[in-house]
Amino acid sequence: LPRDICRATFRVKVNSNVQEVWFTQMRYQVANDDEFRAYWHTLIDVANNAPLEFTADGKLIANDEDGNIFELKPITPGESMATVPLTWEFLSSDMTETALRSRGITTLFSGSNIEYIPYPGRFPCTPTVAELSHRFVVGLSVD
Image 1 (spheres, rainbow, N blue to C red):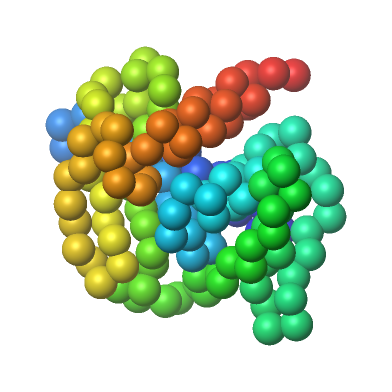
Image 2: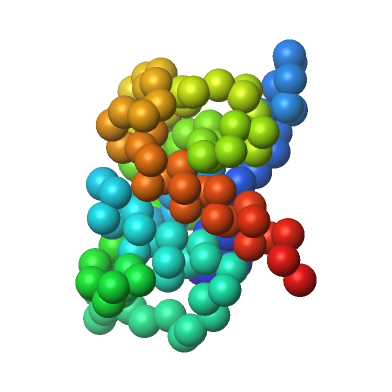
């Protein structure tokens, strides 16, 4: 299921040579805070299990909490890393939930461009992303 895959890859721990690192990978193309909010509410929010809807051409119909609608194109398995829109070190409003306890993230943009972005800054290093990421972790701990 797309929702299960998205939740499983939203906060994934990997071991680097030096330390454990938490990272997040987007499974649908998200370009800004508004699209991220809809992506998060539709696919990541552990309290949302409403049926998923798709357009005829396979885009996810994503809704934010206010009912705003966005159509998000999926990243299909097997695509090269150059076409993955975003992968970044997990960012939360609670620094104890992040890997580096830092106020910045290393981000892989489409085209394999890697850049460090300090918090708060451009998408995905924004207060919206940090707060919704924190809400995801809190949601996981609720039975």
